Length: 356
Ligand code: AKB
Image (cartoon, rainbow, N blue to C red; front, side, top):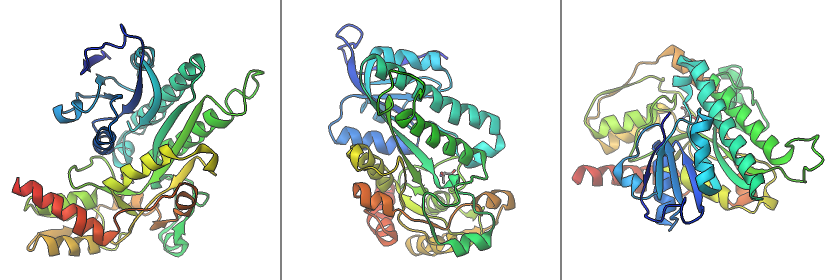
């Protein structure tokens, strides 16, 4: 896969020595948009973006370079590590749960093969340059596999060590990547006489719930019903939800999802009691979302036409997750509860965009 680089800076790293870089894979995706905006607004000038497609111009201007590269192609990704002194990686490239169920083998190649390439290169170049690269990884509530709806509804808020038996390819992919990330951080090459107390990378992961953005709509996820419903109503279009009114899973806003990843990245490793953390904020039913959306957009044509197959995915996910470990270890706390999500973020941002 050709690597077409768009370098915003004249001081080409190849001639002036290796610039440090914060690598963001899947940069053009939903979380990538929010993360690049937050990092560049915070003054970071070392953002190197990777995606399968060119970044939009606004995002590209916030990065010092952007590369069109397939994370499945190790030979295509490796030049990035040769060209830049990579210090931190946000590895966001992935196929989500519904897409993954349509092509499990492709999902494995992208979600696991792509992650293995990133971990392998981070370890190799980190060891070469005596730098332990920090890798931030978005895992998911899809790593949980509740055996049936009765167990799910009885279980309450799930801790990280409960029911982690995924029932989807996406969940299996993410669960494995969590484990191999921990291996690279704590157990790498156990038989090597040269191994130290810590592995060559500092891997940290968040088990994200559904994420709602005021600005973008995801694709290929099974939690997409809430963003699809909201943005259809904002456009004045009818929407039939593919999940039933009583479906309840944990959610958070995109600003909170980005803040959680930056908070975990900034945490003192010595304070972390685990490498994989739950984070969440609110968990109303799909019907409660519809009610709030109708309040904001009177007359919105929102109905429910459950897709049994997609609903069978979401029935294995928890209705709520326990994020006490994140709150205790590195001070996680969401900015938006349900009321603030609608009143302070979603509706004002959508109205402002409509006005513009
Ligand atoms: C999906 O729906 O697949 C994702 C997720 C919950 O991880 N948004």
